[in-house]
Structures are given as C-alpha cells and as structure tokens.
Amino acid sequence: MESVLLAGLRPIALGLPETYEERAWVGTRWRIRGRTFAHVLEIVGGRPQGHARAAGTTGPCWVLTFRSSGLELETLRRTGPPFFAPPWRGDEVGMVLGDDVDWDEVAELLTESYCLLAPARLAASVARPLGGDP
Image 1 (cartoon, rainbow, N blue to C red):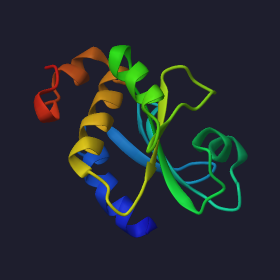
Image 2: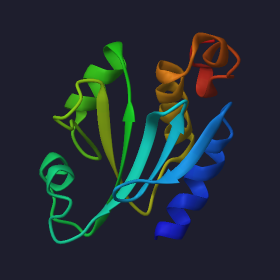
Image 3: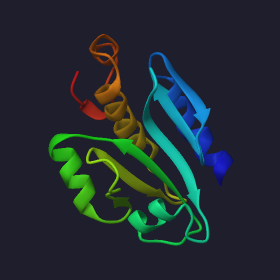
C-alpha cells in the first residue's frame, strides 16, 4: 500500500513550487522552505502512539497529516472518520487513507496546506483545485 500512496501523493506535493520530499522520523513528509505541509506514515501495533491515539486506531493503517485553517479546519477536525484532530498542532488535520482514496480531495487539501505555509509569492502562483481560492 505504501507504494500506491506515495505514487498518488508525490505528484500532488512535488507539483507545488519549491517543495521537496524527505524521510521523516517515521514515514515521508513534504516541505516548503523547512516547513512540513504533508506527512504520511503507517500505524502498526498502536505505534507511533501519538498518531494511533489521535486516529483512534492501533492499525494497521496509513494516515496523512496536513495543515488547514478557518471553517475548513474546524469542519475537518470535527467531521469524524476518515478525519481526526491531532492534538500537537491546532492547525493540523489527520486523515486515515483507505483503499478508496479520493485523490481530488487529497490534492485540494494538500494544496491548501501548502498555501498556508508557503511564502505569499509562491502561494499566489498556485492554481487551486476544485474552485479553491486564488
């Protein structure tokens, strides 16, 4: 499953200006100028514990975390599965990735996450999917 998820996430994340991918303490993350806007990892046997607790599962499963703001942040953090609210950052949202990943939705969420963390000049140059803000 990892290769399928990475194959879906990479073109989205790396298609954004000046982004790069790196191995994280666990899993893989995508960054803009040292700031992580997306992180994917596997929960197995209740580890990593923080993610397992936040997602309400011991796994095995894959989760994606990203940044959000405003009404979207509040809505996603309260919606319930597949979304969850990680407690370590108030602007972060988690999403359990199943076999039926909606890649259009993921593209929209990651693009918004990137735009929150990227310098204004870079964020302004990004076309937002699904009719998002310019």
